[in-house]
Length: 119
Image 1: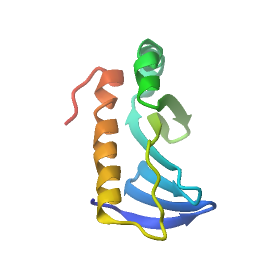
Image 2: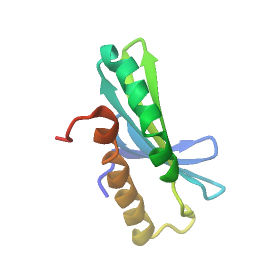
Image 3: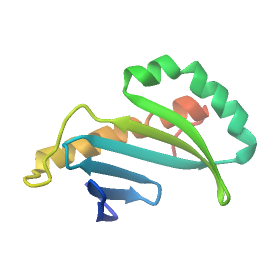
Image 4: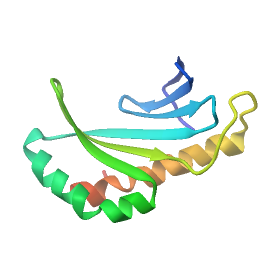
């Protein structure tokens, strides 16, 4: 699983994949996956409507989608609570591989919302 590093957060540990993609493994065992991709700010309203259109499908996959409008740009963000728990006291290769598989699966949802193919 390629990573850009690990860091401690208030209630767990964060594994960074890319600048705007990471997994938070909480002390409680909850695992949250966050992916954000830069979008053109002129597309915010269009993508908001696409999120509404696919809301049921995203919800069935435990995904929350939203748009972040920040001073440095606009981002399409996906937050997903994974269905399995991981203990950071005893992580194993299988658990980390499952995280990577779910990361890739979640990435595949981006074109659904953006209407573009992944490069």
